[in-house]
Length: 296
Image 1 (cartoon, rainbow, N blue to C red):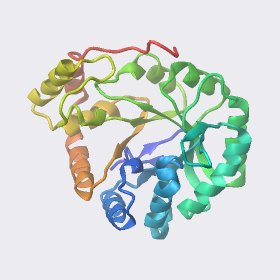
Image 2 (image 1 turned 45 degrees about the horizontal axis):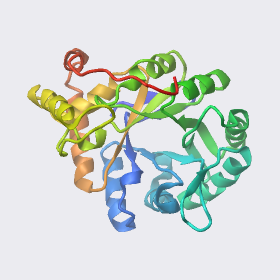
Image 3 (image 1 turned 60 degrees about the vertical axis):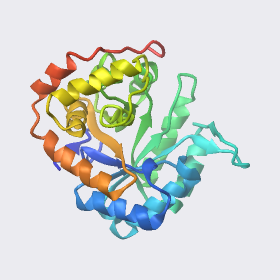
Image 4 (image 1 turned 45 degrees about the vertical axis):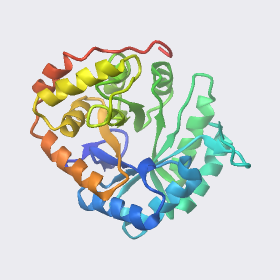
């Protein structure tokens, strides 16, 4: 896979990242999934301290321990588990970020994180101190770059005015084209790149039974799925090309809970390389655009 440059850092990322949230929580089985991904060229792994109350980071850390230098590792911070385990609270404070990173480093069995992301955010958050925390961690060598995870154009605009995050993670697929209106054009003009989540739209455009998605009815979802299917393209390949052709996009984060899913993902990536952007635009023109109603 041809890697993509992140303008604000000195390393490149794979166009496909393995979304580790979908891992089973069993080291033996998850090791196979991660090994298959890395062997197939997917050396970019994305996790979070929130997933499985830290177990996800532990598994990823154990699985890549012997090949840490061969992978790009991303994790997230900001969702603080309550002591009683009943849930989590949003905490983007400087003090919490500086504390939480130590736990993530320990669970991941590493002394640095390639991309450390704030796992959400609103306009009311203390952005100055959160961004300051990331800069401190960069200076300390504990992270190489930072990013945020947000679908809110108003938040993205504010962060880009204050700093230059390496990445911004957001949802994007033919069923959620909201970023095309403001977020993508805004980011494309910056040195930041998008990490796309939800590129497969929960499998609704592949093989999952049709159901409502955002403002689309189940029947409309089925209609869009059939439009893609009638093109003769492998649905997964179409969805990968759909995301990767966007100039603002750096990588698509795709989850896998089985080794076979990784193999199919690698095959789909190879297929998408043969699909022209023109064909994707032609099919996309028949899919209704949606817009952000809030957080503009």
